[in-house]
Image (tube, rainbow, N blue to C red; front, side):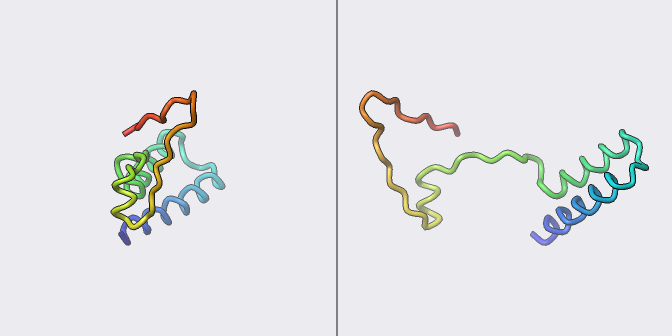
Length: 78
């Protein structure tokens, strides 16, 4: 986990310096940022919605409330 935190800190530092200096070519800037983002955030930066079972396994209480009359039940987007 420490590697990811260090990468996030490096990303922040590079972004601040690069945006402030304006010395990088656009292509080089984007390539450097993309590499550090992959290291900092992993392959996927999107997250899935946790299921009630996953929340309960983590010790988070879950109460499932049925939809009100005339409304559709929410769809699971997993």
